[in-house]
Length: 158
Image (cartoon, rainbow, N blue to C red; front, side, top):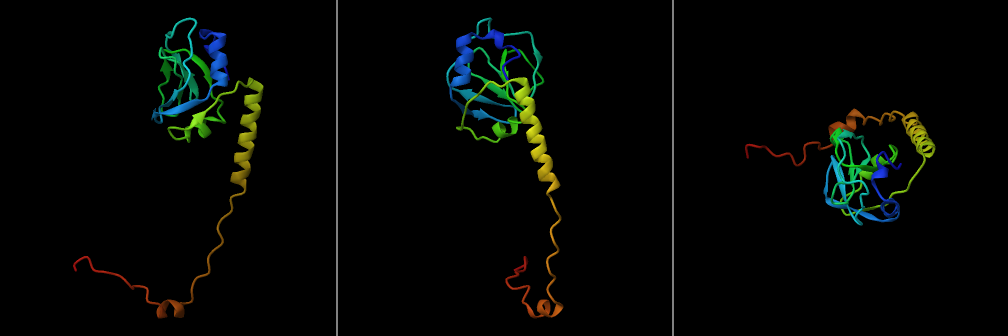
């Protein structure tokens, strides 16, 4: 979703963000993914008064290259945030290795909420489908006594 500071970017920058392909740089970890690709031009400067960030916030520092904040990211930041990755897509993005490419698409809040509900329903169905394993048949005692169960055992003292 665009925002919360998408007004800090020119229309051209927003168009670039939504049409370009970015590559996850090697500087990627649980704090965030730095993205390599087209630079985004700020229209009101690259610094803001520090405010809250959330998992999925897409900050754009003075370099013009986006950074997607992930699970271990800081809680506040002083760079404008052009967008926020929707919650259902953050885990998908976070599993991508450095060198992978990513693209962004704008969605409405209603669409993001619908995707989140679908994701939650899918997860709930998967959890509901979990069943205990059936007990494996236990070998008969005679079979255990006749098998060489210690073949290949070596002493640590040898």
